[in-house]
Image (cartoon, rainbow, N blue to C red; front, side, top):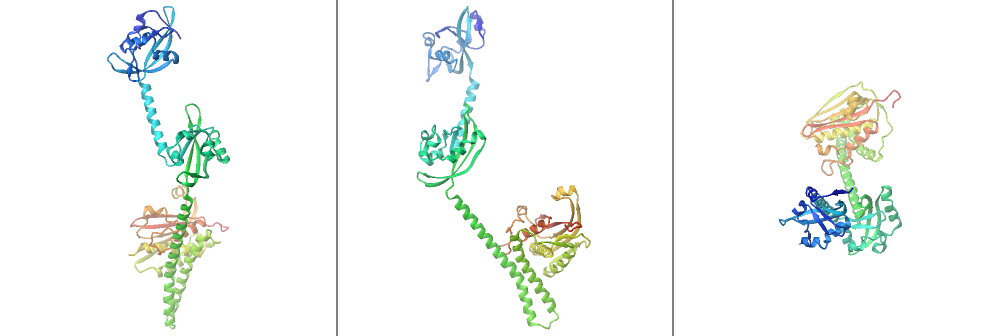
Length: 485
């Protein structure tokens, strides 16, 4: 919109510096604000252009403002200080004549924003060039826009050798692979990504290498070009190292299993041999029947050690029957008493009238053997071991708190006063082969087997433990319905 200016006083009333020029760029007049900042001089390459150069002939600065409509300049004020401004061209009518005015606007905010943008750009470039992976920024035509320092160093090329060139043309067509280019071309329009594309290449000073390529869309550049980031990772030897780590882990697990099996079976065979020798030497003793029961008990325990391993390998429970958990537990408790040292007192709280559950007496024997064995090791100086069986109803509130399905359960509890389980280890106690015992002192399968047997029957296992105060295991077995399910 044109502004009509008739008098110099009107110009002087404007708060912004303003210079009126003719069609050829010569200065016709200027207002007081322009005189204060001495609009007639500006800094170019560190030197000030004098007013006379601005007025006749027109200065290059005003020519640029006339041509481009806007120009940034550093102007020298009368006191010698420099102010940063934008010079903007606008058309005005003065005394009936069409003239051009050049107005100065403070460029402080622009300069601050420009410097902030430059700082952010330099930071991003720094991050880009410090990443170990080789990076390329491509447009949607797969032209290279930028290459990271890691990429340039790996291929020993200059930036000019790759930037601005189609991806398929660089490095003698190294990336000219139809499958790769097809995947990359689909990233931007489809909002997709390329994951772990593998290929081989020979890198200078490194020789043949296995490379893994990934790509995804990153942003729209300021000119609307859609871009994607291509990551090239040298994975030579990674798979071999992973295989070696896995092989060593398997060997460690097998070693722990073998050592634990030897220890557990030896513990069971030792009393078998002792009682067998006593029976052979004293065939007429009244204790013969008692010794034979001990031989039978420990032989069965040795069998259970093997059953633990087989159950773990099988991963599924055997076909079960309806049993009374109370009656089966009471029978097991009598054998457990014979095995426990005199320093451990066994207490029971068993409801004989609990409903039937689907299980197997052999499984229950395994469960109690594992749990009470752990309790014995947790109380080397003695303590109280409590075994309980009860019928419980789990309502919605308890179910949510205990992460159980609402319903009727028979709960088997085993509680000791031992050293407890640290918070660090509680999340791992059901992991196969995890044990805090010394090497060769157990298979690390006991609690994993317990968990698998109970959950295999549709039940759940809950554990509460405090260090130096003891541990309680609660095993919830669903009550069988009238059809035995």
